[in-house]
Length: 104
Image (cartoon, rainbow, N blue to C red; front, side, top):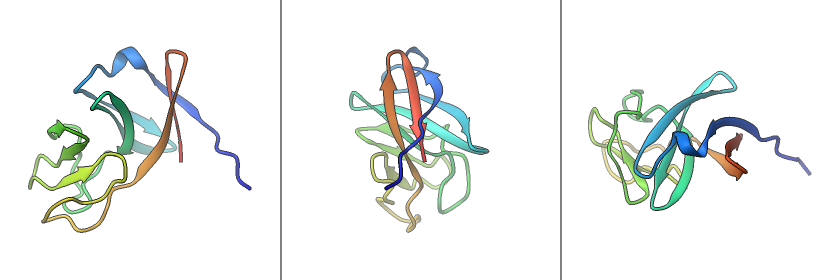
């Protein structure tokens, strides 16, 4: 049985509702998203165009790539429409006091 090691990456106040914050985690660019009253952590790269998602639209539990409009489910990483077919990576996220922590 593997125990997850969570790492603090941001403060809750850094990510108000409807916003995103880019953080570095284990050498990767990760996007912390606040949508539908929840926080999510996903890879900051579109699986289709390999473009950063940080400037994309965030709505109702999904984020859209700013280049071609591919949408990704923030909880599962699932590609929701073409041109993307592959999912994006998601990370475990928890709030510990005022800190946002993520794990692989």
